[in-house]
Amino acid sequence: MTSQVIALGGGGFSMEPDNSVLDRYILQQARSARPRICFLATASGDADGYIARFYDAFSGHACEPSHITLFSRTPDLRSHIAAQDVVYVGGGNTKSLLALWRDWGLDSILKDAYESGVVMAGVSAGAICWFEQGVTDSFAERLAVLDCLGFLKGSCCPHYDGEAERRPAFHTLLSEGAVLPGLALDDRAAVHFVDGELKRVITSKPLARVYKVAVLNGVVEEHTLECEHLPAILPR
Image (cartoon, rainbow, N blue to C red):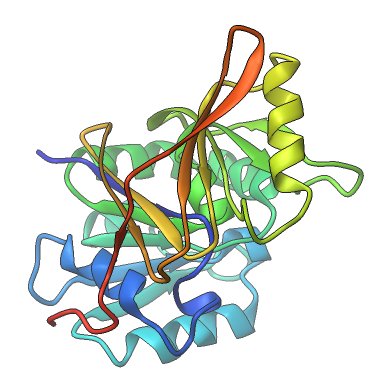
């Protein structure tokens, strides 16, 4: 069974309400012509407005949207997730997201779904959560390293061009040996992994980039990956 993760550094319906190309790309990777897609807004505290924007965005696509909340009456998580074609994770506080998922057992449920072919996708917190480590703003004082789910090897830093402190913080953490080498994703850029291997780098704007970042001979080096700018309209 093919396992897939699509991680957005920033973008999708929460950042680009007038450009659905990344969201539509996610739907196209599903195993169904009319995919069932479940939104997890845990990192935002299941913010009502965020969930409403998800439904506003995806009701215009050929899909069956739903969501799960961990802050009110929660459905049977395993059966609901197993019935999906796509799980889409929103942004917010990654540390809180992971703590709640682990307490509910949702981390292992998602791992089983991932291995059974459900596409895992997300933006910001919903991007870094799939990696071994992520660079997070969950803490007020500073950007920090967070151990994540480990579906994918290495680390991930989102909003690389959208937040001024991201690049220097990632470089410092790498220099200190505090974080694993990994990927830095600009806003409106995404990486698509298949069976744990990077298959495709896509963007919704021409200048968005993804970088492979590591320490070589004591110096932090960035290698720009080849990106494919998607057309504004993808076939349904």
